[in-house]
Amino acid sequence: MIFLEFHNSAVEDLLLTRFSSAKAGSKFEKIDHTVADFDRILYRIHNPEKDKSKLLVSLLVNFFDELKEYDVEGLLRREYGPYILDEPYPGYSVTLCFDLQNVPDNYEAVARHVAMLKRNCFAAVFEPFFLLQALADEPIISKRAVIHYSPDEAM
Image 1 (cartoon, rainbow, N blue to C red):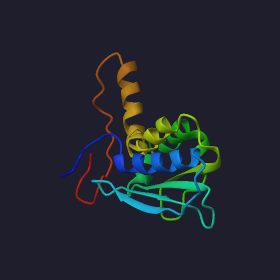
Image 2: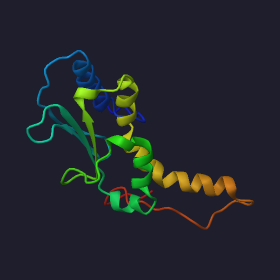
Image 3: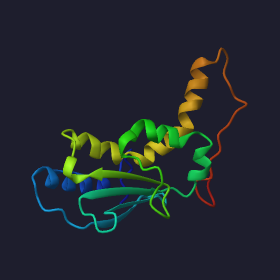
Image 4: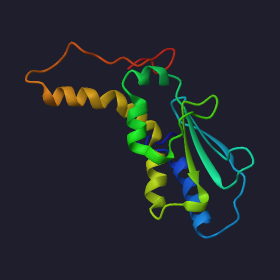
């Protein structure tokens, strides 16, 4: 059964476990989990080489280059600011980095927000069109965003 949620529960659960363990002073452990979302998007939760005190969350979106046309990188910087790496982990579209020695007090909210990473990538397409619609005196129907979601699908 597929649960369609606006966030990825598996990612949230993995992060909550790691963040709460770190807050409790537990020993840092190696992690390398790949979580496949229902729509061919992959999350990888892992440590950088030889540093268990850091936690990386990498996301692979096959159509990320198309999302760049809608300033997905600007939106992600706005949403994930200090956590986003300038260069994603090789083979991924975006990577966030967390220092387990300095887990924020609101780590539950952070985990939920990170679990919405895919959702926030999609938001880059919708935000400018919502703004255009709000600012328009009359309905706008000439401008369309087309994202090639998979080889056989577009939206």
